[in-house]
Length: 259
Image (cartoon, rainbow, N blue to C red; front, side, top):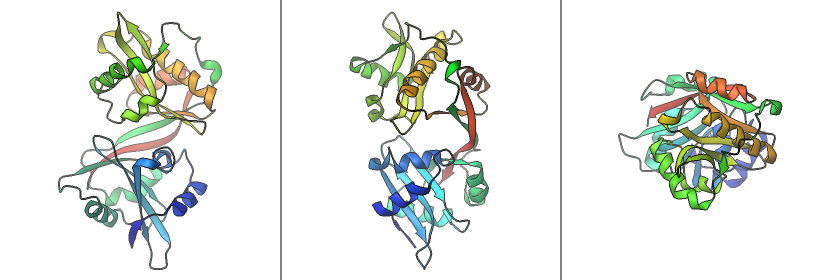
């Protein structure tokens, strides 16, 4: 049986879930909850086997999945959700899952393209942060239009307009935003860096590191739990993050799948 989960059922899941092992779904349960619908698969006796959630507001079909039992049937869940959400026949969805979940679900996924490994990194060494650089400035509301334009230019697919309410930092050169960064999540619970980019003409000059360091410093002033995600093959970025105090804590996969 499939149905939408109640608030009390979601609270029960939240009380037991491990944030760092189910990082994306944790965000759907918390900071993204108001834009999310959660569906569960149940046995005839009412045991919850797993959950799939859909997030409104992104320019692609954004899902998260949380298998709780090995008998969870992702294929059946997708068939149910396709009808429930009235998705088109050619719809392609995306989610992020950890290695254990990939092992459970891979045989049930029709991959649209090969999955990519994604490292969840956490800031653990505050002493590694370099001194603040005066060229990195906090960007107020007057820069929101410029930031949003830059997010589109940098093709940051996961950017939503509501993230403009989180702090942004950047470097300006003759009124042009040449490096910028912000947060997907910014709270006392945890912070997730995101929306980070540098114009191609200004790369390899340390601007990305300076912006990331300032974002991290700000995040650590709010909570000890500061994270970011990075594609495993992006060795340059991983080296940068390690140099300012991050360590990889969970291996995940970005999965695009046929719904």
